[in-house]
Amino acid sequence: MSSSPSSPSSTSSLLNLPWEVIYLIFQYLNKEDIAYAFFGLNQCYRSAVKYFIGPELNLAKVNDENTFGFCLSTLLPCIGFNLRYLSIGYPHALSKYIKYIQNYCSNLDILNIYCYSNIEDIRCYAAYLIHRQLMSFTLMYNNKIVGEDLSIRLINKCENEKYRAIPSISFLIFNLSSMNDLILLKRFSESSYVPDGLYMIECLSTGDWLTDGKDDLCTMSKKLHRDSIFSIKQIDSDQCSREYELYNEGTQRRLTVLILYEEEGERWISSSILSAHRKESSQSCSRFTFERVANDNQFYIRPCYTNAKRLQVSGKRIIVSLCDNQNTLGHRFKLNHIS
Image: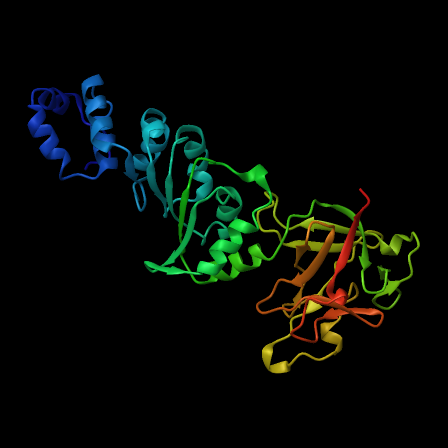
């Protein structure tokens, strides 16, 4: 179809066509093009378009900005209540259309999203759309189902309900744009929401506070000290990633570990120590996830690099785990929220 609605001269011709011919024309057009060309002609055509579209609409891969914008701002407010299935996404970001779905598609059963994670973090999709009432959540890549166990874990780990935008959806499908999306979703499933603020971090195996000493980060017996107060901040303003940075409140130095690669092996070397005194580089990691243990303020802490193991207490230092068993008391930390 053309990129602009019908002109007055073509409109008068269309109004004289029999409805049988109109419906025959509809059969050869995409629903979004039908809506863009015919929806605004008159009330009869509007009703005909609504009837033809029915309960299913596919807006995925609609490249024309005018057509897509028309469907969001004009079509969905009129037919969204009757939709049961909607496919939407690439090449448009979630932030562009999520509010229209939320406001006008309250009876959706199935939402099929083509994620555009090249411009928008895949974890934003997870934070806004996954909820515990989902009957099915499917991850697709190249038209094949992937990450079935991860899909289940993402539903079970859903905890921050303030993002839940479309509660009516029972079946949710994510069509991933790359396999890196699976890595980020796995990290998202292993992290919990932690409010930004000031914390004292307790090592449960020793009962000591995590403390920024003169030479490096260490543990100290419990006493109120400024060097034992840390600021935890989520890295993104919309708080979808569940990745955090930690700063010493007094010095504002950021905590880092050096990235351990598989070929180096897991051994206690200076690169594995959590530190606030290290010069940051491309080989250091300053982002962490917090995985809640049970319902208490106890967490596992993991650096955000591929195949990273959890942090653990070793002597007076905090290091990247030395072993495959990462569920011991030495791997648990309690966050004491100060403000």
